[in-house]
Every structure is written in C-alpha cells, then in structure tokens.
Length: 540
Ligand code: ADP
Ligand code: ADP
Ligand code: MG
Image (tube, rainbow, N blue to C red; front, side, top):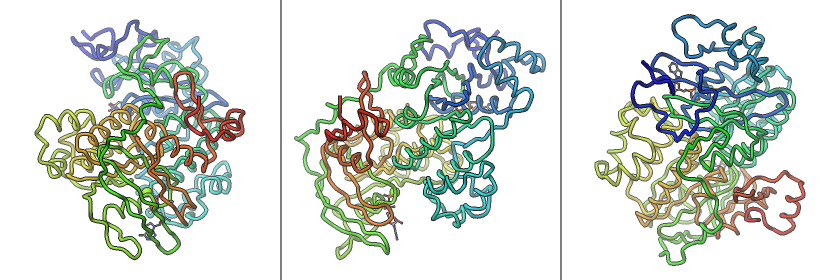
C-alpha cells in the first residue's frame, strides 16, 4: 500500500522533506508518474497567450516533464497504471480548470511547440554546417535578419557551429527557438554565458514574441526572469522523487516567496532560511591583510588591447568581476595565472592561481571521486565532506563518470576541483552557469567560506547580478569596447563599482519592500531619477 500523500513511498513519506501544513488541492491526483515507484509530477504550468510565464525551481523537479505534456510529446497518466488512460479521462479531470482549453488542443494534436533545451552543446553534434544554414532552415517566421542584428550574430553567420563559443551558441539556440512558427514556446534557460547586456536583449526579444504567442521560460537569473515574466510558477518538492508546480503568481510576489522560502497560498516552506540582499553585508573588512598587488600592465592581441589599472587583493575576500563579454576578463585571469605574458614584462608568478574556466567540458571516464582525489589530499577529511562535497551536492554523483555528468553537475564538480587545489588566488569564471537558484546560493556560501578558511583571495567573474551581489565584498569593473579594448578598474567598494558598471550599461535597479533589487524599465520615472542622482544600484 503506497502513501496517500505522495503516492511513491511506503512508510517514510518524502513529503516530510517539506514542511507542508496543508496539502494543496493539486496533490489529490498527480499529473503523471513515470512508474509505480518513479518520479511523480503534480501541477502544470499554464501557458497564457500574450504573456511570458516564468518557472522557478530546482533542476529535477519535473519542468521538462511538464513541457513534454504541454507540447504533446507525452500523454500524462494521472498516476494510473491499471489501465491505459485516454484523453477523455484526462480532460474530464481538468474540467473546470483554466488548463482545459489548452489540453483539448494538445489532445487534438493541434499544438506545435518550439523548445529551447537547457543544454545546447549537442547542437553542433546534431547539426553539421554553418550558423547561417541552421538559422535559415528554422526561419519559419522570417525573422533571421532581425534576430541576427539584435543578438549580434552578423559576424558569426558563416562560422561552422563547431567553432562557436558557449555564449555564441546560446544566442544561436535562442534564435532557432524564437524563429520557428509555433503556438507554444518553451525556453529552458537562456542566460548561461551571456553578459548582462545580451541577457537584457534576449529578455526584450522574448517579450516581443510573447505578445503574439504564449511563452514559458525557466530561468535561474532572477533579475532577468523578474524583468521578462508577468507571472511565475514555483516548482518545489524533492528532485528525482516528486515535483509540484504551484499555481501562477504575480512575478514580484512569486519571486519574493521563492527567495523567502515560503510559498504562501500553498502554505509550504521550501527552504528553512531566506535569501537576503543587504547593503551592509558589503562593508569590507579593513583589517584584512594584503595578499598581493596586481601590477599595472597591458596585453595586446591583434585587434584587442587590455589595460589593467592595478590594485590590491586582500586575504579572505571575494572580489566580484563584472564586464561585457569580449572585454578581456579571461585574458586578465590568464595574466594573473601566468598563462599569458603581459606586454613588455615577464610572466606573473608571485602567487599560485587555481582557475575554473568559463566553459567546462569533460570527456574523461574517470569518476568524480577519482578526479577530486587527484587534486587534494584532504578528500577524506570531515572538513572536505562538510564544506565541499555535501553543500555542492556531490555525494550522490561521486561514482559517476565525469563525461556523463549534466551541465549543472559538471559545473559543481569544476567548482569543487578549483577550490581543492592549493593556491593563493582562486579565479572562478561564471560559476553560476547551469546552476539553479538553490545551488547558486549554496555555491556562494561555499566560495566565501573557502576564501576565509584558506586566507586566500577569490575572484568570481559572473553576469548574474544576484550572484555578484551575494558573493562580492568588493568589485573589479571592466569597461571599454568588447572585442576591441578593455580596461580593468578597481577593486572598488561595492557601491562605487556597481555605479560605474551599471552607468556604463545604462541600467538602474530599484529595491522592492524586501530589499530585493529589480531592474527598472528603461526610461521609467525611477530610472531617470536614479540616473540623475548617480544611484544605479544601492537606492531605496
Ligand atoms: P527538470 O526539467 O525539472 O530538471 P525533469 O522533468 O527532466 O526535471 O525530470 C524530473 C525527474 O523525472 C527526474 O528525476 C528524472 O530522472 C525523471 N524522469 C524523466 N524522464 C523520465 C522517464 N522517461 N522515465 C523515468 N523517469 C524519468
Ligand atoms: P572576456 O573574458 O571578457 O569575454 P576575453 O579575455 O576572452 O574576454 O577576450 C577579449 C578579446 O581578446 C576578444 O576579442 C578575444 O577575441 C581576444 N583574444 C583573447 N585571447 C586571444 C588570443 N590568444 N589571441 C588573439 N585574440 C585573443
Ligand atoms: Mg571570458
């Protein structure tokens, strides 16, 4: 006899993992279950014409399963296995709900969906040819020229897909999805490897599309999701065991409930601590010792010049690094790591650097455990277990082969590997990519503690403003012209650094009642007022 709460356990109910005070109505009947003891999904997101509907929640909670159902790729079974469930039975179950009309179309097979998958590295394997040929083949809405211009793909149209960077491939994948003619669009993460400017452009194009067709967007960059979506569904539960998709909520309320860790209407606590944005947490610790001095230096490639102003890095601090793509951040990291030689100087070798590159790939059949053991002698210590393996969620995948990991799993292994090496300076390039919000939070804590414990300096390059806000004590700011010239300025105190960075971009953030930063509509009253006052980020 299976438990009536979740329907998957016998004795110990996994719902105990959540503090559910009152079971939401949706939990009476599952939407679908993969097998008598397999993953079970409750609740579906609601595609709404003319709107971007957001989905927030961890990986493994059933978002893709929901989309397979909404796009007609999979018929739900309502958790029933003793007979084949016909569409008539399913529609009867949804009678009187807002989903009924939509599901009728799915049943009648009149829904055509366009999907941007979460992981895009398979695209060059599945499609041989140039960017242009892929885009032309999918250009059902005749938007190629427009999207190519808006997403700055002009210069790569004749490149072979094999040679694209992750950020280029992401913009190509988005263009493919937006260009198809469909009556339901599902975009599973659009921001990894894009800089904030490209993220804002993607957000604008998605909104434009949504004015004509329903779009569902899964996104872990909350500042962007907040800007593009009108409503959100919160996904919660126990990854791989069961997932619950909440009713839709207004985006401000939904995001705040998610960050607070309490889904109010459903009366469910999904996390026992809130995510807070506090200006005061950035007051940098003046007692910190100097770890190293970054020298003034320059580095030129044909067509690109980097200038580094130079400054001090302190022991135990996390420095955020912000700046557009192609502005020299990776080159800067390579100079510090002694991989590249500055112009007219010698290789920098005063500190040992451990570096996590932006694009993490793996083709090794070594296990995760073997890989990490080769980097540290402390693998068996309780410190390593409690500060690295457990918080980064690596225990369940220690025996997996590195080459079989998902993008999010690989990212967490790469972060662990970087922090495992003995070094004075740790540089992590876009650690947030492919991590869900919970994982970003935990990773932030792991990185901050590692800096303190090791008395090391840690630099984190990232484009997710919430990650940068949570992780940084001070900020290095790159400005210039992407692909042409860049200057590394700072480190600055957070307020000065954010003002410099955002004024270059022309973006301002306001604070809502909880203190959470939200991107202002360009040209809105607050946007103009804050620009006039020179207060781009810390403004109440
Ligand atoms: P998300 O998109 O939120 O990451 P998915 O919908 O892809 O989540 O998967 C949710 C859970 O369902 C996962 O634990 C996954 O292993 C399981 N699952 C997905 N497809 C199948 C399948 N065909 N058979 C059994 N289990 C599956
Ligand atoms: P970011 O990390 O900020 O995206 P990068 O440091 O990777 O920027 O690149 C900055 C610029 O330098 C780009 O225009 C890039 O094409 C160029 N560049 C980087 N490395 C080399 C190299 N080894 N040879 C020539 N050009 C390079
Ligand atoms: Mg880079």
